[in-house]
Length: 164
Image 1: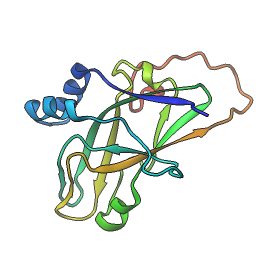
Image 2 (image 1 turned 90 degrees about the vertical axis):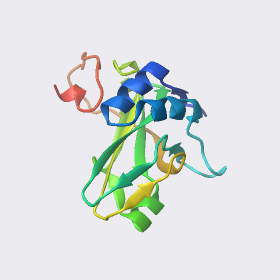
Image 3 (image 1 turned 60 degrees about the vertical axis):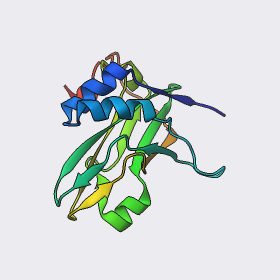
Image 4 (image 1 turned 180 degrees about the vertical axis):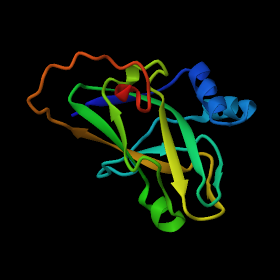
């Protein structure tokens, strides 16, 4: 059963976001061409591995936003949950800045093309994520609704946009 499909964001959107978070323009243009869609490592894997388009080096307490170049279209009623790969936490102390990334089904319609960007931090020094290293994984989950008033608001932005 398929509930979603990954796509690359446009080159323009990737470059805009990469520059916004301090990545080099030439490096970003080169990275875009090498972006691969998330995939599972084995037939029994639940998680779809995301690869870093950049080399990212952390000092203790650093926070880095990694633009993945990926967007996801999924059926209503599903969510993509993003977690760091367990080896990053265990071996390098890297964790998500927001503990778990929640990608809603309507995020692909956001003004940033639904560009999935992953915020990481660590409490260790001189920790590195290599370019094209699998660093996070996304897992699709079905969710259910509680009885509530009807929600009519339409998403326009990314991080924190539904709370504005």
